[in-house]
Length: 320
Image (cartoon, rainbow, N blue to C red; front, side, top):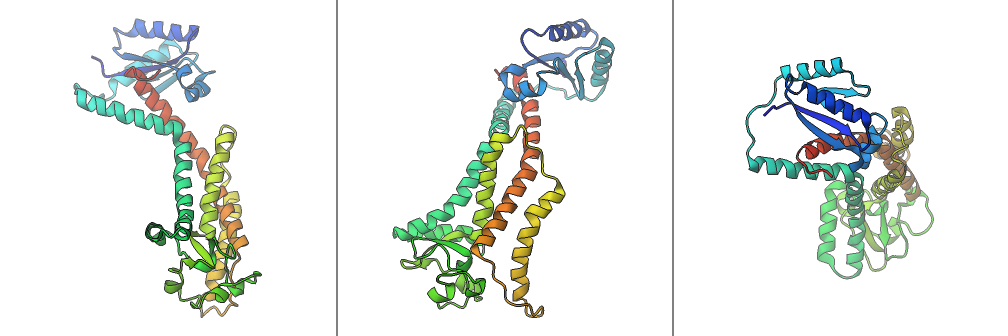
């Protein structure tokens, strides 16, 4: 059996597709090949990609689009057959494994956005479960959540949200925000970071969310951006790198960097502490800008993967 696979993207009532098949049939004896037909109407992505281009032929590494000329087809078949081809029979067990992996990959490429959004939802949602459990008196699993997120976030209480307390946040007095400050509700020195970060709260001040305000904004906006992208992905183009830097990187760098530099003794800057509003705003801009930059490219890559895997599944009679 020939190891050269020719993939024909086709659809019903396609006269040019039938003509391409006739040409391939006429060249079968001279250039042996296995023809795999992929009905583009079996998959919305294939239909969108090829609806005005069929017939499309993939001959080994070569791609031909309508109008397909006999000379070009002959040259492509000859060149593909002359290139190294894999030989040898494949046992049924590896074939079953390959089909399974291709089905999984096909499913991921079709539903990658839903999978991404679900993972981000879990990631940003679990930290809110910790204070809920603490308030309910179920402390052990709550502390597990704090421990899991501890390497991922500083968890400083004066830069975190609180649930079930007098206020939603207790910023440092240096932030200049009205209401109770961290110094009012705690005797812990704010810049004793190792002690401050383990404070989870109490029944009066409430219980700390396991991610800081900025991280909640970052991942919450990534989730929001992913949901919006689901509605506009066919029309949204990637943000330019310069705009991504100006909108996403610069605000968060200035806000966070100025805090850091103000604490370094050799700079002698006045102490600056950001506010919950600024942390939320800069984190949101950062998250949305990254979605706008990355997701269109991921979408394009997943469409390429979906097209490739669809042809493999069609060849095995698994797509339909």
